[in-house]
Image (cartoon, rainbow, N blue to C red; front, side, top):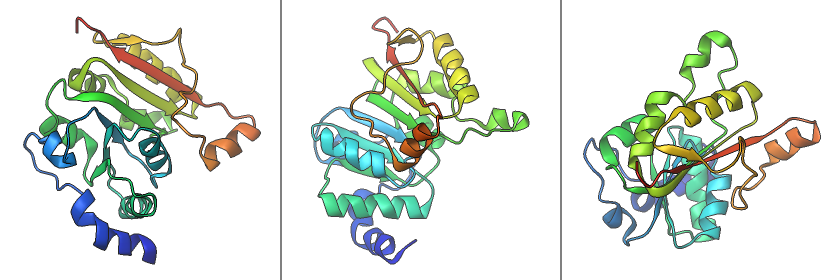
Length: 210
């Protein structure tokens, strides 16, 4: 971590970082208010997270990331931008989903640019797989959404297949979705677009009858 990230960790961690505990999380108590909760899995250095949280002050953002520098960087952004609607759990997201989040508790889920695990023999390590998608869908409220984004074409295709096969979800688009207004273009993404690389967004919605 940089000095600034470490300072943010020390000063803001006690308020904004929620310890992992294998029991249901009281979301209203965690945020100090009621409101729609968006889960973000793997926020990197928190650039997009902070941007989206500032655009949507009425929503609560519960963010999972395991790496210290990323957590420190997001805490630093929280301090600089005075963002009160973010909480961080520094733990594996799968454990958090299984043990801390009740069914029908989320208004949305963001999974932006997860590790694509390029090599074929590593594809099974990809985050977006049928078992996890089923668990995420169960934790969405009726009408809640799951928004994934990737810049790796084979992973985009796998995401589309896995999400389309989940009976609790319906695609909001005919295939890939236009980039929603709230998801910012990152520096990395802008560079890729200039080089002719593609970026694919997928937005699926929890069916009312699911």
